Image: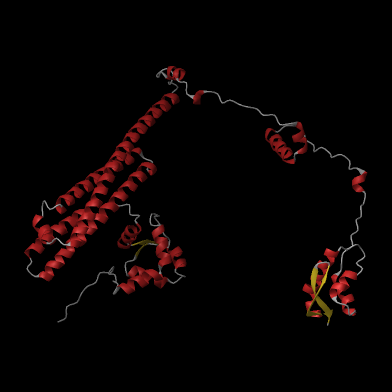
Length: 410
């Protein structure tokens, strides 16, 4: 007779390998990133998630089957396990859980007992590895809890609008600070050998010594930070007490004012008469008159005047002043002629003859006076622009201290 196994309706699949887990997270990283960034939003719509997976509903179903995400009606959210993992890795976790430290302390004590009772060297080494692993974890968890505690304290004081809730949260965070401080002292007492002298003498090796030294440094840093955090909490609580007292006084003043009893039931007149704060002084004004020339010549000033006139609804109409008549001499047409050298025309004349290029340019009539240096420049321009039409030889000549190549038409 076979035995049947009943699986509840919400039975979920599990990943068969690390490769499958990483591949699933990588494939749907766009959706998971959005879910993590909006983890504090109460609703993440299913239709929006469908867009992120290219409207493939099977991908969302697969994530739900493997408990990566959870669906509540038409809303989606990350599963608590993956959410906690992402927050811890990204160091954005706001939850302070000092029980992790206490749990590792208890695991260390149990592993020490097993180590001392075990005779097999291989299994003894396994217990020693568990102790080392737990000691490393305590240091990391302690530092992270201190950072999270400091961040939560600042966020609570700066962002919580309700004074009573703010005070209660800070007092609760102070209790967690005290719990962490106590656990740090327990850890320090344990690794110093005062409780487990036999183990740390028998099992001591180079790696365990390094771990203990690093752990003591981490615990010392945590204790110093916790002292600063305690001072910060005390300062915040004093501020809250002062602010709540001020608000309560303002409420009483507001009540008396609404009842038209502020002057008769309070000494506000005497207090205000004795107060010489700057806020009670009239605001001084320093008028600056704009020059008439600027108002008449500046177009931006005219726009400002229009806006002011429109705002005060004045009946005065502003008119743009007309410019003076232009002088006739500005309207006279002046023509200036300039003779330009046409290199194409010079090239055509050169190709029609047989003289070398330099002598041809030097004797060419350009229709205006052209100096020798300008003719040398024209010679160079001709070669650079029309070299494919010229025959450039290896022979050279000199003229007025200028050496030039002998160039002929092809």
